[in-house]
Length: 323
Image (cartoon, rainbow, N blue to C red; front, side, top):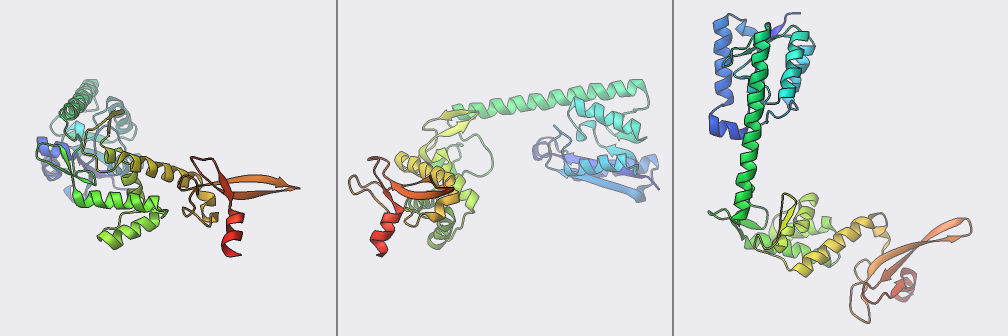
């Protein structure tokens, strides 16, 4: 079997923006190096990971590269710099051992590495320590920068603003009235007894936008609806403009939790969300209990007032309604 030369290139979006390590630039340098060294440039195989961090080896094309080395298909790997492979000291030593075990050369153009000598392996170790230190320093600076953003009342996360808000030039959030209307309408429909699936359809019918089941659930559970941002495990109250009444939000959470808990029996409640207390006017909750009748166990369904603790059997309601 003819063994091939592999070129591995990797970039995270942040690195490409700040340092110019574009994938195309790396590939060009590696191909020029292969041509200069007289390698068989007709059989170069490119492995490209776009937008992946080097903090671990869990990258699609990196895993393909490792498999190719272990299968004996790859005779050498060319990278622009060692940190294109990894920025983890532990991973570097694992890769070095793998290269030596499977008789595969590693060529890092900028770092001029040589794994065949003790000095070369020591240099690899030193470079990996520096690369990991750089990654950790960048991570710390990023966290500090985001924390300072939060202290200034700015939304700390990049990309689009969360659904329901727009991001202003100063980094703070303001309410998007149309999206806020969708969230409040969806909450009202949930409280009226509609399922999340049906609410998705209603949103599309009324607003021309159909959220997925999971996204709608996230929208409804988002504490930013009542002005709270959860950041680093802390709840920042009144951080963003609230777009939903606190009582409505809490009631929606109750119904979402209740429905999830009673999902196996929900379809058994014929009068789901339709029964109200004659004393206080509250919507009755669904309850069930299991009673033993001889050798059998039977489930009975009730509707219970959360305030008055009164309840009525579904069987009685059926008799009063249909007979």
